[in-house]
Length: 372
Image (cartoon, rainbow, N blue to C red; front, side, top):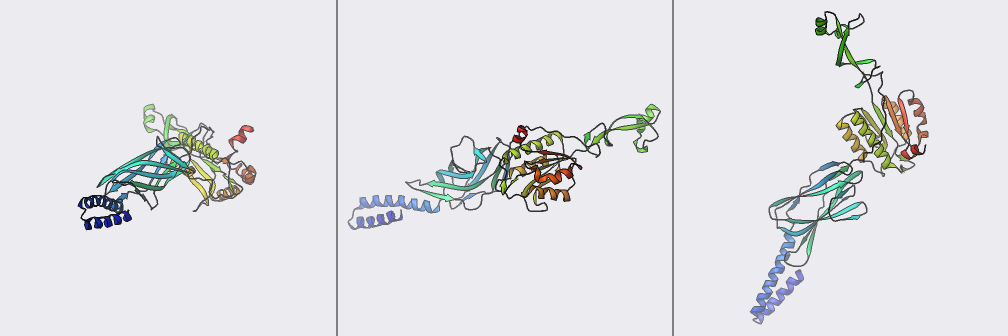
């Protein structure tokens, strides 16, 4: 375009030499258009700002979410442009034209923004695969308003938006038995422990009852000492130890195992059972593997599902026996323990030891259980 502008200057000089004023006027008009295009190309997008706020959204499998893209333009307006974004295929756009290239999804959106204007583009997506989807690249294609050609702007900083897709929640039932030998929150007729916050009635006083268990108001009404009766409660906590190691990589049915464990987590959440999770994937910190300490409730459920969502087949693993050995030394075993492993011979030493300390269950893969 600069060569064209220079050629028009030469033609204008020739037209003025030969007093061709009409031709000179046409050349001036064309040169003005070309000059405006050069000015627009140089200035457009220089004051276009993308608000790159750190954001992580959590999505259930087949649940809906959206990318929120906010732009502010203090410079020249952009008409009829195109916005291109690339993100990992853990989420897929809803009713949008897209192009998939390997693990990435390319999406094109119309883009128009005026001077001193702020716009927000919401791109609806749905969770289609467990994992993390990040915005990896963004481009704005700006066409020439006065002729042919376009300019492409690429956003260089790292994009900070993420979509965390939780595992698919299957319905895999499992049983649990509260321990009558530890105080807890589960009602059990033959427990050794009473819940002092759950009185359920009174009975006649006997000499072996404690003085602080007397119900004074009931005693006045009955004209006889009455002793409070409390709910008998038991303890139940669980440990899920998942083996994802196979030779130098991860197991072939990694997704099935994660979905199975996610279903157990959902069952514990619905029943109000505290649980802990250990997975033999290397991690930095106090525990050299992925570990979630015992807890219950909505926060524990969210942390557990997030832990399962970030697991990748490319993660470095730890020997299952090494993880069990570390657990044996540094943690207290709960009343119930589940070992999710296809190779029980690797944990045979701990299976024999833990069977005397906890209600231990070894769960191979579901295909192996169906064949058995």
